[in-house]
Image 1: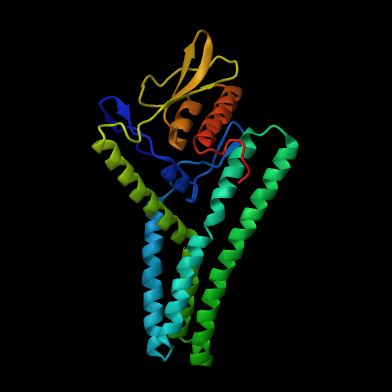
Image 2 (image 1 turned 120 degrees about the vertical axis):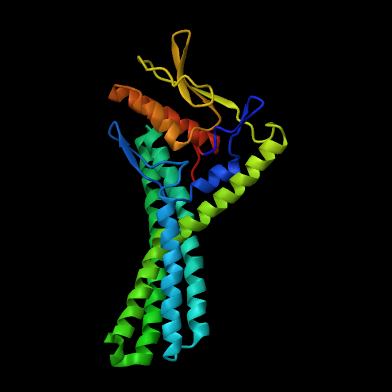
Length: 286
């Protein structure tokens, strides 16, 4: 996230709409101090997502042209391709609730609440699997149409290429399409918010400092940069102090500065609490 844009002493902080959109994108989980951190505000491997998205177009376009050439009705395939894109985006909708629940599980100490959170995670995953399955069914429909035309010729080089192309495209839809659209949306909203920040002279979308009390311990302070989240000490009490919402890299940076596992765990829990508080999801069912 663009935390380092500074105008007249004001630090840019992404608005809630941008932060919320991050929850729909794929994350890289990290295991630190025995805790699996699912992430919140980060985007993982967008370049690979972009390549996969482009490859979808290449495969679907090539396979569809060949299918039309052997007699397939173009409207039928085009409709299924459009449906594929819609399903791929819808399949990402439960990613937000699953991601929030995984983060809430880390900071929750009540085992009864943990059980409820686990149920929400399972429900969200089943929802995503259902729509991913529809993408595979869509690919199977296209293959069936090709088989209707070719029959035994489905095992010819042409038939095999079309079948494989549609199957790979369906797999890439599951992996890439939703991530691509949500990331593009993030960039569009973020660029608009940054423009507003600059036009207002740093007033609009300006970061408000957030401070969270840490449990007792001998923490390593820093980093010594007021534009970045850091651990500070005042009157022998330690805090996480952040100009706006810390993203996943910010949080990871101050966690890894700590030498002891217990201290790392404390920073993880408080850091995730800060992130969840920023989007109003600290103690809410989602």
